[in-house]
Image (cartoon, rainbow, N blue to C red; front, side):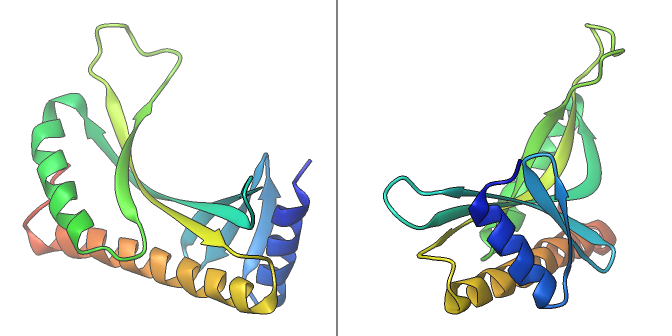
Length: 150
């Protein structure tokens, strides 16, 4: 069951023309070819905390981590609306001695004062800019011949 905050956010994003669907404990927002996972929870002090996750379909093996981390650090310095992170990929049938694989994800967190029209507009803009900025940074790096090499 989704929280009332998430339901209100999903409804507002749908009404603004975005494709939104409920998934497990969050929502999936589709914009073109991108899919941003969105999770919302009430802030214990006030407002709502919104977490955004953008799966970039990039995977890195453990032995490449030093170079990848340097490239990601440089890329993160130029991002205003999110950051790139590595998450370990856990597969059930992987042998114990196999090198670890990490997924490259874009992540952002946004605090909303309330769920009024102004704050929901700020969320839409943040969502749009987060997706565009992270996607552009990764594509520029992958096709530019410098930085991230997976």
